[in-house]
Figure 1 (tube, helix red, strand yellow):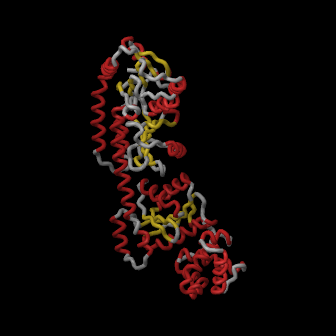
Figure 2 (cartoon, rainbow, N blue to C red):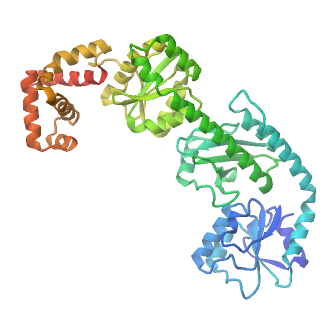
Figure 3 (spheres, rainbow, N blue to C red):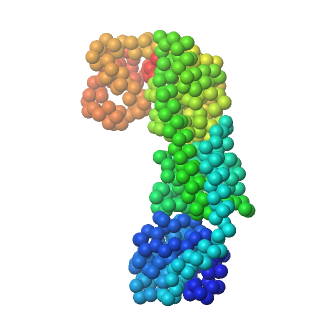
Length: 486
């Protein structure tokens, strides 16, 4: 049954006052509701019937009321023509016209039950099909699938649609199906996503001129479901309610498992850097946690990107051991995962340094050093992937032992300062990092400029190097780089 059928039935007493472009909308069910937020309780292709209590009085509030009904996917609204109902303002009717949402007035003498019976009689043949579809839905939900996309693809075959579920913060497909969504479309969603709960079905809107419908999911992390329907698809408000709950449950399960396992792997990276850690134990722990131990590489980025990289890799199904090392956020991943890192870098505009391939966990130390060299080339990439093999020249030390030797030869004398050793080293690092700007260095360290002047003097005295000398300054800068890697 469609809206024009309802209008054509004289017995319903309905006349259209706005939204004429939507008269071909299907009516799957009709509900009366007087609560102030009926869009929370009604969903896709359902008809709202009201005597007017749920309709706000203010013009702008009525405009938002119409928009929320459309966003929830309702097929239209019927308001009883009585003295109790608020007058529908021109602004609200114009919004309904713009959205193509039918707004109808109904004669007071006609009971709502008559419309319900007409809709039920017209749609009776669909009920058996709905039950069969739900049976297939829950059988699919209980299935076991070897490939990550198997779950979604089975649901796609049940409902004759293409779909995918996307984590809003990372842009990762957490429940990939056959639907491919461009990164620009995902970014658009990220800026417009609504929290779940503003409607039981909670359709957010659409993409690609209405070809893709977008739904907010009741998940732990903000997640949206994108659906592309095809001719003969089996989705309506009734089945969509069940589908969303099933998908939300699977998304929550996958998210909890992926993030939990990634947290358990955090110790693997620092353990692999400790020479005292037995390799057989390290390999055993990694294998038990599903962390690959061969054909690896180290990825380095800023600690500001820690949560983003950790969540993105985890939700994308990448087995990784990630931890903060030497002032950077480092991740141990497979070489085959480089395309995922490339997409992550491009989508979020972050820089990532990549080491050469490491044959086993024994090469993590050198891999970490080389990834840092790649990241710091040209003062660190602002965005994009930089591979160590692509860095043509670097003054940075090439090994951990070389880094320790440089630090000892240049900064070793600072240890004569006793308890002041660390404050002098911190001062030197800050002074060089801030390009020898006295004001910014003082602010970074939280000290007075006179204190900074005193410390600089002590550094020059103990190291025997003059910070105004190009040669001495170069040696101190190389030692500062080596300090990060020793």
